Structures are given as C-alpha cells and as structure tokens.
Image (cartoon, rainbow, N blue to C red; front, side):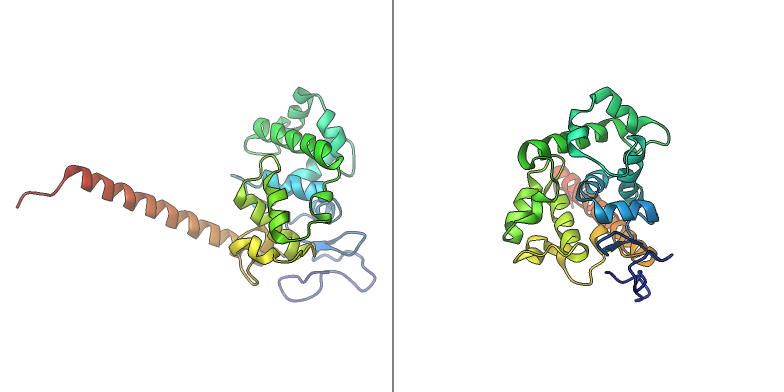
Length: 235
C-alpha cells in the first residue's frame, strides 16, 4: 500500500479502491496515469508498467502510462500479452497506435518499439516481464538487465529501477545507488516519485526547470564558442 499526497492511505481496510487511488488485487496502489483503470492495470501487470515506461518520452507522463490500458482495450483484452504482441502483424499493430486518439505523439515509431520490446521478452524471458527483475541479486544487475531492453537507455533504465524500488517493493541490494539520483528518497525527479496530482505537478516542475537549465547551458556554450572563434578583440 502506498500513501496519497495528503498522507492518507489510498485504499480502504478491505483493500477496495477508493476515489483517491487504484488498487490491484495484491493491494498495490498506483497513481501515475491519474486514471483509475489505467493505474489498476499498471499495478497488476509488469508488462504494462514496462510499456508505460517505454512510452514515457516526449509526451506528458500520464499520457504515456495510460497507453498500456488503451492498447489492451484496443486488443480486446484486460491485460497485455508479450507473446501476442510479439507475433502481431506489424502493420496491424501500428494501426492500434495510430487510431485516433493516437497512443503517442509518435505512434508509428513507438508501436515498433513496443513490439521489439515484447519480442525481446519472449526470446530472453519466455514472455514474462517480471522475470527481468524477479531474481536480480543486486541493483547493478537489475540495471544491466533493464538497460538491455530495447528502447531503454541508461536514464530510462534508472528511472524504472527507481520506480520498482519506490512503488513496487523490488529492492535488491544497492538499488538506490544503481538508480542514481532517481533513487534518492524524497526526490521529485521522475515518474518513480508520482503518487498523486501534487507530486505529479512537482515532478513536472522539476523537469521544466531542468530543461530550461540545459537550454541555457547550451546557449552559453554556443556563445563562448562563437567568441573564441572570433579571436581577441583589438584594443
């Protein structure tokens, strides 16, 4: 069970879902997608969580993590199946993403990436997404496994590792260190820290500040390079 932003439990004593959160059958509560049905799927489906993380780029976080639920609906199921996705006709699978409303800002390329991810899971883990982290002995080992997934660079792998540790209870030795800054307790850097609307706003603000700082640094570097190329001014 997790806490909502106001500090209250998001589930009732009998484990049912309250208006504040979405709880899976095993009692895990997530508030990432900000949509109860989508969050419930993320909480009970390891593959849905992985796909949501894969989609989390160049779109709002809640849009990305609603994607797995929408995809499952369009496939006529209440969950995602790696084997079925891996074997799906590529053009037909792409149409599931491009059908309006599209699942992503770049639906065609993301459909291909999701299918590649599932094909990898079938080949390496018999289609079981949770096997990626189930027996990982250390945080470093888990980071290597996540980084090997198609579409998962180091940053995405660290964010998902932090999400597993902070909200899914997957905490192999050294997981916080392996997750880098994203594993810090109390941080508001990524989807790993989202537990409701307030923390979502805080994470979004952090991302905007980081983007602005990076843009300013790039501009400063460009100006310095241009000045150096002109050489010293004559006195």
